[in-house]
Length: 158
Length: 185
Image 1 (cartoon, each protein chain N blue to C red):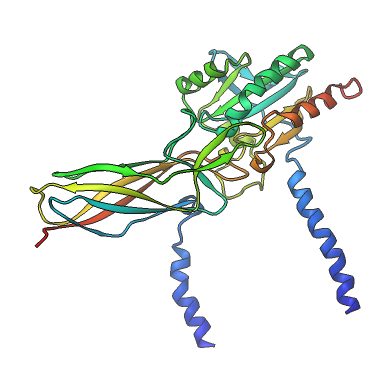
Image 2: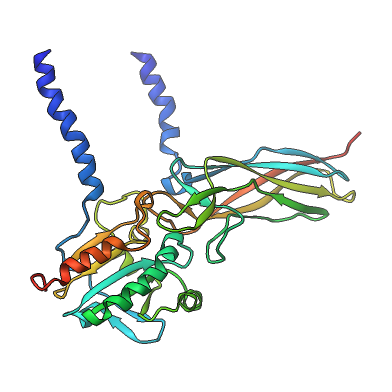
């Protein structure tokens, strides 16, 4: 009897703090990465789109569509050299000859960083924004932005 | 066993029928269409009331909505085909600025009014109660099509369904044809 009650007690605060539907449509996961001064590093940003939904890919076929974009605030003495998105999937617009280039499920965005030799060692947090526009079979939603942080630990290679 | 069968069989028959009904049933049918007064891209003010006596087709859209854009050329064709029968078409663009909407309107060369619902208040009023309760109410009508009759009642309301997407507006035209037959006029 005590065990189920204890489980309920332990679970309750987490259930109560679950993010709203709005926030769980797309989730971003990024772990702290160790980067070495003077060396190029690739950071993987995990994105998960809620089942049944898709978001427009970073490259869209029609300029009026809203592509998925990643904006990262840089820090002094570090260069963001490249962002790499996966290839999108083709989503047919029924009743037309058109296809949409979309992302769904889980995918990774790769961020290429190049910390300069002048960069001070230590932990940094890069502020980032992921902008996307999602649709499912019954709705197309207004574009949303997820604010998140990319933690990095700058070290020297010894 | 017989008792179980007696209860289960009707339940099994009723379940798919309920699902089918939920998919095909249109919301707000027979209700008075929520009134609105909005400014068009042409700078003129349009209210639904001023079109009493005409059938009005309303499409809720945004410039970034791929399904709205796929329908756009067909909506223009529909307007041209049904205009002689006193049918008015409107696009109500939701929560976007005039310049952006004007750019897309030029691309599709719309000859009917494109109205700006910049705050999303009209879209909110057209969100059927209980439909997609987890969404913001002004998002629910996006990419939907309605027909409002001469008395201002909603006679057709199709919400977005990408699995059975009707880019060519076949169902809207079919319903318009029914409504325009002399016995319905």
